[in-house]
Length: 323
Image (tube, rainbow, N blue to C red):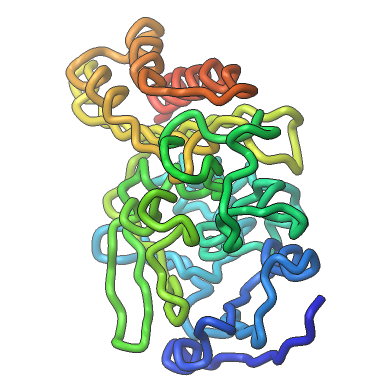
């Protein structure tokens, strides 16, 4: 690991002053430290943001909940308020990696982590995201890579387990920077490789996510993951679904896929297929088919069309059954 200076920021303002092109933020460090050990990320300065005031709490807000970016994933999964009002998020948090990772990792870190693609995380490869000229995964070992949104220069899948649930729940994020703070919709946080092949978010080097803002509750929501093994593994396909059911029919629906695209992938076709209809096995299957209608598998990952379709169908039925 390259030698680096370590600074502890005591406020948002101080953090933003310390951060920059050669300085990175650290909270739990479960992803960053691995990248530093592999010489993928080599900062001159590491800035701890773990002590920022008010960023480690889950608090009531005017419309819903205000979740600090330093809230541990384990605490998010265990929160009674999150379980009751936003079960899709609690389920997504409970599925993250292992108990050890959940007790160290934070919600902000989970949203802003770098790709888990093996061509990115190993310095030997000429990866576009690390300043190289190609995407080795496009024609290489790509069984876990994107089947949607993969028409750009990189075929990574977004690594966040929490982001699909937050998109389905219509969350917003608060971002602090040198010019002050701003809020953006969670979908606006992420960028496709064809927009910026070097980054996964809109964050400037001296900006940080400080809070996630949840609006009105979605008690009929759910997250379903398909994995190769039950624990401590990346999802192959994820679906998060939020429903509003009135008079026996679906009045509103939000569906987001994870682990299948370079960003959390909003499935507008699936949402349209559900609205105005009773949620049944048949309508859930029709929505699941619509969710993967535009998929373009690579040479080793056509199976992910099936796993993504299955995740959507099961998440819809789980959300509809929730009380």
